[in-house]
Image 1: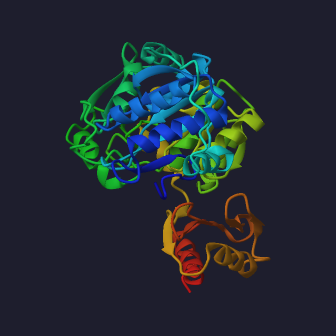
Image 2: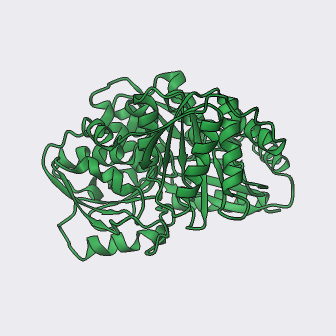
Length: 448
């Protein structure tokens, strides 16, 4: 059981630290901690998601909570069901983009408000470790089934306003993106699919668009059919993240997708707040401003982003990891909504997506660079703060950010991993030469 309680979810290798018995206890602890009486429970297609569902449902019903079983679903569908079925909470059984041997769950309160390490997962861990689960309820809960897919698909379709039909390519990686694409049916957005058969062993490639190697088959399909596809989209295992490639198969940085999705939404919501995570290129904020929106910076992590969205009544947020959050979906992710937003933009233009993206490629980014450190991460961050005092504006929304953009044309963020002894650097500059010089300077200090 050691190590399965993470910053944003619960995750481990099934049959080792994550077992049916542990899952039963987690369900009991979650029910007691959150005080839930009616809970949506969904699961991905991994073979062990079935016994884990049975264990979690038994834990909830033994605690006196009723279960709404929506079956196999994407994580965005579970969030939608939580809000629209007026549940007290939801549980998505998944290990997201992890490989086949992993599983776990994402926990929410009502209205798809996530439970993170600092808002409840640590408490649930303590309750499980101490067997502090409370008595089995005299009145056990019930299990009812609900088919949420038609309502979710109709909800997503409301965001489609294509000016002309488009045809795209989708790589489902045998995962829950197959459910997301149900929303495309009957719209001007048609698609050809790769690996459009559910298989939780992920036999073709990992369901993780952050690993660019997993996009190779999608790129090959598009390049083998020039002129056929407006763009391509690849879903992760539970379909709460998406990666995109252009009509030539070129990989599009996810912060550029944030910029274009925000531009689409702001056309109907001028002046609205849109968030971008602090690792994003400066072009994200610039594009949001140019589209008439109010750009705001968020820290990394879905629970933090969703809280900031609610506090500021934001209509959208994009994260460099490929999460796209919509006020219209209870401030939760929807990869199909992001796909429609991109399609809306492309359909209104006489330019292909690669040409729409080209103006955004004006600065030089390092990408996220990880460094394994022997010093305590807090010591490294304190050293960064001291070294660059006076070099630019310093803020600590997440780790340490130094912004010298207006004076010297560069900025960077350094933050610690939540799970490993790693320091992560993201740096951007107005020229490649400057980016490389500042990147090497900061890395040298981190790795000293």
